[in-house]
View 1 (tube, rainbow, N blue to C red):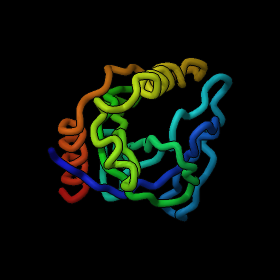
View 2 (cartoon, helix red, strand yellow):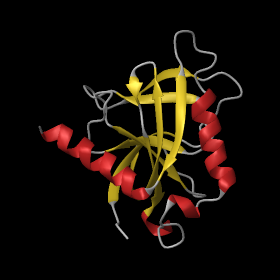
View 3 (cartoon, rainbow, N blue to C red):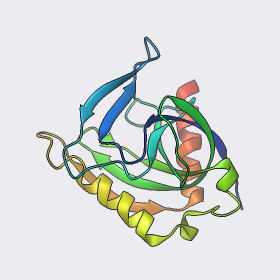
View 4 (cartoon, rainbow, N blue to C red):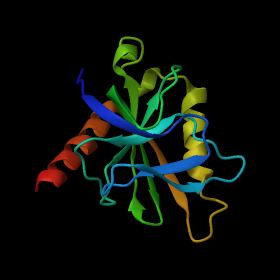
Length: 160
């Protein structure tokens, strides 16, 4: 089975409603907006280094873990799947990862408990509902092989 270890920068901690983004010019995390109730990120959220996604930003990633992950930190993680979705700007996939040390327990999205995946699906389907002019549409989860293809494509996009 294919394995893919990446470095993920965390911009938003699990259970936060504060949407931070890394300012590329000064290297600082800046508050973009506060999500209204009841929207809280169901897992740590950020991006994979050295990638360029379809939205001309780094490839989005979430890390599912029971450990506390802090924002403004890098973590090594394995890709296990992807949430395929789009928003008002176009295709906006979220690569699903687990920490390097958790990979022996869960090495594929098919092994992730349904309630965790349902929570992620619900959040990304609804988190823009109260934001005028914004929307999101979630197609669903795809396997690790598809996620790695998306990752590889985003790596190539950065260098071409």
